[in-house]
Image (cartoon, rainbow, N blue to C red; front, side):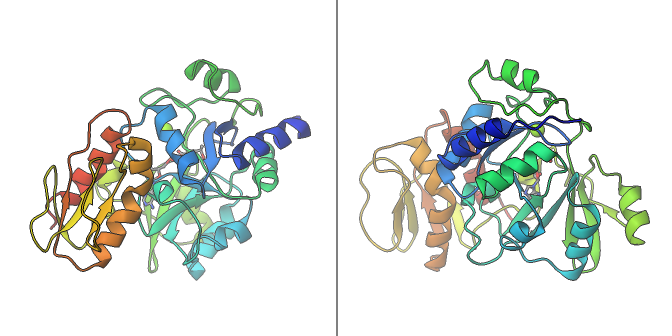
Length: 312
Ligand code: TXA
Ligand code: MG
């Protein structure tokens, strides 16, 4: 039996609404939560975890109605949601126009992974916060996923507030499925067994191709790449779009500056939206200024290298 501390839930919701992080329990593992519509809050997740890459995060919703405001559900997606939500199933779905999610939460993709957790404290928190919450497991990058509030506190040296909901019943992260027409593809095995999904729906669930596994999520085929080609650590040539950083750059329609003051947090917040904007100019090439490899710069450079990598 989970004892619900309503005051603790209200306090945690207030923190999240104010753009702060708060760890919270789910039936799988504890999540390090942030307002998924607030880019600065989502960036704090990466900083706090020390995560070197912007992986797309799972966005948690209070119910199917909240999820349907964020993504388009095909009939098959809705069947899956109705069968297994709340529960340890994340669905990768196309974003809806006007979704309001921060680009950093989806790492610039045009899809989002959504789930409704099956935990009374998580659901009460999502209702109280009244907004979707991005949450990866609440552990420093490279460490084990926490299944108690105590493990979360220890992991972050007490620096992160934790909403205590007792030990997690599952201890394994959610199963992640992508829906491709009438195919269901498992991207990450998790707390909901593939066989159980197949039995309940009477449909096959394919295993994602070798290498598409979640151990290298940024490598998923769908990772964001602009239409334009990209050159990194360089200055623009005539006719090229330019993603600047720090130093003053010429002001014209082909230029965006990630941060005029050289602030990596600001740069990270602007990264995906500015790449989208420069791509929309139709320029064949986007030149990108050097970005320091410190702090969030590591994640920024990782995404830039992936976006610039040769395409098949
Ligand atoms: O059980 C769980 O799922 C836990 C609890 C806290 O809910 N959360 C969790 O979240 O494991 P996270 O953010 O660590 O999992 C994110 C993974 C990414 O590594 C990525 O592989 C996949 O979900 N993912 C997210 N968005 C995706 C997308 N648009 N396309 C493909 N994969 C995506
Ligand atoms: Mg994790």
